[in-house]
Length: 265
Image (cartoon, rainbow, N blue to C red):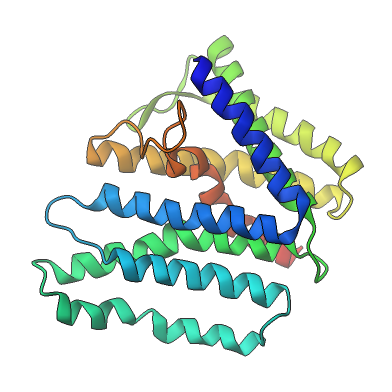
């Protein structure tokens, strides 16, 4: 427990500092998380003779993250993003020369790592530049709302939880916990609107609702993956907290929904 607390405090301070300091520390933080997350995913999936193309997958993940970030900073022409489209075909071509037992499973897992893990981290750049320049407020606010929803769900579930939310996948989650997490996330969103004015109160509340619904679903999806593979944690990178996918499962799931919401509203 002590190791978990120390790792959480240090990790939280580094995390918040990197988001707040500049767009380049944001870039380094989430770029590193994207690459480590993809490698962690490939390690988990490397069972039953499945052999994802780790090198090409990491290369594609890095390319997606870097190009979307540079596009938001207006450091490249927007039409250069189209170079990512033929890049999707590279795992298919590479598998011709790898001579592996299950080529299309390898291709599928390679691309799944890029789209499921790296792409949400890359899409954070679409949130971090709301007015054409970097703002730490939306990113830090989203993280605070995720932590609030998790904390509210934990304490409400421990205190009042009796009705199982999704027992087949995660026996510990309850409807009471989900309600508690939702209430706390909405309350925190209301407060964030007072201090983080780069987004409107309506947007903050909308993000809180998205996180309340899809954050827990992201957690369930990751639990489903681990159960199917027979593992307890996705990794051991963070002492007492597991791996990248353990810590950022909610973020990975909610980011595409938050991007769509902010672009529409």
